[in-house]
Image 1 (cartoon, helix red, strand yellow):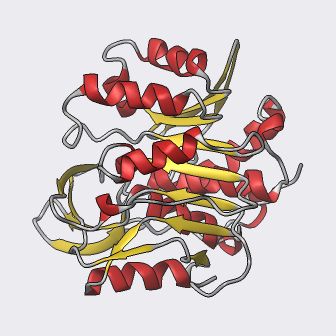
Image 2 (cartoon, helix red, strand yellow):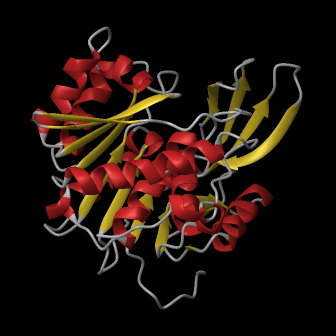
Image 3 (tube, helix red, strand yellow):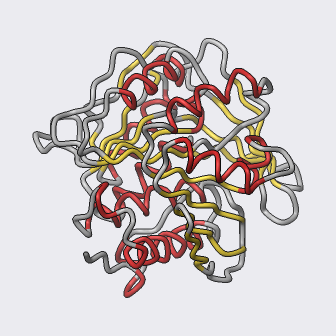
Length: 313
């Protein structure tokens, strides 16, 4: 899709797009297009779902590259807001295992400037999170969209907590609770849970479920994904791969889950179907695993997945 597409998106992904300055253990630096929601939108687009990205992009060269990449991956860009502020940057420092630590350059940059947005008619899944829950005025815009979500819209929340950007938990957690009250699916990593409920991850999961979420998807690196519902738990194993880096793996997982659910023609009412949830998560972990074998966030296309990508109700 492109900016002039007349086809309405079924999935809307809201949040930041930025450029990752990936620094390997030897100190070599490579610029990669990124941002959690940007990566999730690309994953859904590459998997064949009608998806739109709702975020702000700079008029600078990086912004033009971000816009072009979205379009190349089949993502509708009609909801993109353009700004003269320079593109937001993140320094992603890789350790020997390929895991990244992030430092952000945010002040007077493009990503936070999202304002006055609306979800198109026909939107069925709204995926939101990461810096979209932190940076203003973008965060207030995303919270308003979640609060106003119609009854038939599935909200997928990915906090993707960034302690370096949100050092004050007391300011962050109330917004998480408000948005979580309308969220249907909350995807959290072990690192997220450590930020939300230090030292008591189970309490963090239970707070999300009791706060309103139907499903919590707990990712834990190379260990099994825990699918949590009220009173139920299913562990979905993660494929073993040669990890190059983990940048965008969780984003690819979230985008893939949304795409699978949409392509299987499922909605909010189906989220207690444990068999369907297990199938969706199984497909999503394969998408994330392939992303880990590549430098930067590069989710696979559906054609690369074979039988691992067969959405069906």
